[in-house]
Length: 317
Image (cartoon, rainbow, N blue to C red):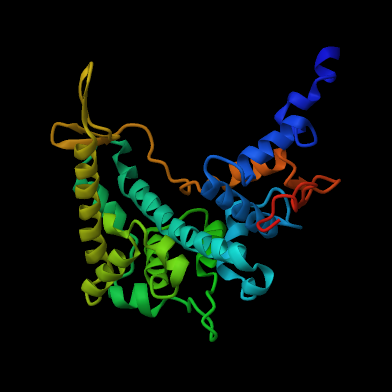
């Protein structure tokens, strides 16, 4: 134990002020590295993240803190400048996109949950649409949505409002998830430049924000339960296609990566479909920055602050 006490600098949580800490910062954030573009992205992301969490409670959700800064801060150009602002705009697109990705994951988990007990697609779809109001898609997913931009074109945190609303009721309903997707569909026309590029980068794979905007247009005058029923069937078909595309031969035979198993003419869900937000690795990134001394916490351990090496690796330094 005495030897370990004398070698505390080899522990990642204590390495920042030691020689290894300086080496790690150079490797991760330095300019003279094999991949300077990646290091530049690390530096810019570090600057943006540090600004997002500064003074905030350490137990708050880091994704939401980045969301508030990059997506819903009206004076962001004054807070961040130059390459930092450009990088925050890229993060804006990725963060907004992630709400829609999460909504699809939750919808799928909601759709197949009844199949924990063996059942049919029709059984699952019936449960899926059961609680939806008998209104037109136009009203539910367009007219009844709150404003998503203010009078100056600034984005309004509707995604956060929906999330807070769900926190009070204990879980996302199908209607709330469809509304979250509808907000994402609106965002396609509300972001531009670097944000739009990041937001729509993978839209060609289908079921992205532009696709869902088209789905709303195509079903605008159809009762929401009927439209949701056709969407649920499309989700089953897409899931089956994805599984078939990914199936492969193994030593034990043909493997199809799916939790839905066919039992005669029925289906059974083996395990549980994930419903957590798709990770943007911001928690891990914050942990790395803390270990490197770029981030730090207050003396009482309650809030974030800039670390002793936070300015050393700022873009332009």
